[in-house]
Image 1: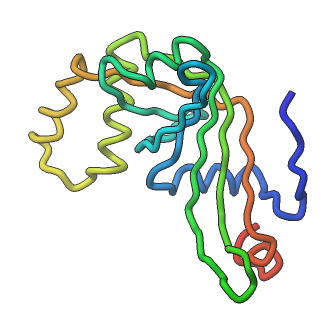
Image 2: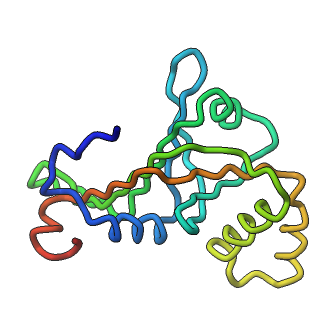
Length: 164
């Protein structure tokens, strides 16, 4: 169903790909957009138990695209260094493939907002955090259930033992 990576020497272990997802700051969600065009949008996210959580406005291109086609991918790059003299770059990335859906119950939405707050606002005042999470009905939560995960890195980083 999913293609094998062509450059197998650059392929990372699944555990490493999961670590990349956990530690990444943002990623790019790719969906089937309007009129046959792909739609890729950079997003903050949180990972928990094989699911990637995103927050969203109540309406928009992202939601429309997800409603039309639930199959998506999400790419995170945690390292990128251009090495001009080698005409290459040293990178570390992961791509998650799966199906996306809109959270259907309030408890699931609150869980996602708490994960996002833990990741991006860990030191915010408790009252401010609770006030923000209480706005749960003002947002949508999109959940990507991971079906396939790959990780890839520059072969030089793998060769030199900087990543596995």
